[in-house]
Image (tube, rainbow, N blue to C red; front, side, top):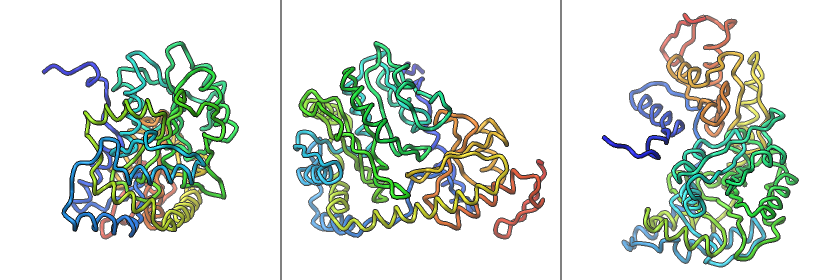
Length: 405
């Protein structure tokens, strides 16, 4: 069988693969604790459900415009004006089947083979593979100071004549770090000066803690006409807990959106009308659910960090937002894939290996589940790794005996 060069170069999504494995084990009755997920446990907003069911009951479920319905675009325009203080037109907006698709069609629109795309490490697992799907070259940038916050000199040192775009995800998956206003300002100004595309992945921008506020990239943009190379990505999956609805969007120049729409039209056509209707309901409805989710996540973060401090040898940076903490477990095992598999096999706790996010020796732990899952999951991990823990552990009625330390 002949497989394309690009096809052979694409790795399986580690996060989706582990989620699938956990679902299979859970279906078999295994007492899985999921500390690897990127899926809030909050219920779908009632306004989304009402909008969805209203259209469903009408029976009028039809094709939609490739770039989103008029109503969906209006909701995105209102959102952009409210949260970015930026007035855009319908031709500046595309709705996609998830923010991931918005990023993908944006990359397919701007990249030629051998172009380079820079993004800070650690990074979301899909960035390198999405760039490779375009025949381009991913360039992860590791901050020289060892922190999770990139510096301008780190970025600049990696820019070459092949560099076409830079992707920033702030607050960041997997670290939860919010990039500073000064850094975003410098990045916007640098990309405008050098003629580079800047893709702002703002999917977690409303899930910030400790009184922090998102940085508005438009505030520092001087080129806001059709020559703008700024692309802003967002969606409903994280802030509204609507991961299964797969609605995201991009805001960019009219020319870019036009080409992105052409590409999307040949991929999937327009997003499902029912799902757009639900997203519109959430975006135009009561917003208290977002704040409730944010507060829950902040409390969950605090609980998880307090428990992690009980481990010897762990290092982590306090997350500013999202629902992840990126923890250095290298004192126990420098091979994060091996450690993640070990924890799933031995104590049925799912974690995400840090190597998939660009830095080995780390695990990405998620606190978007409940407090019970966090405390019990970390208790199991500590039992599995700490030689000073009791030799036996009960998971439900099952007694485990540790024979590996």
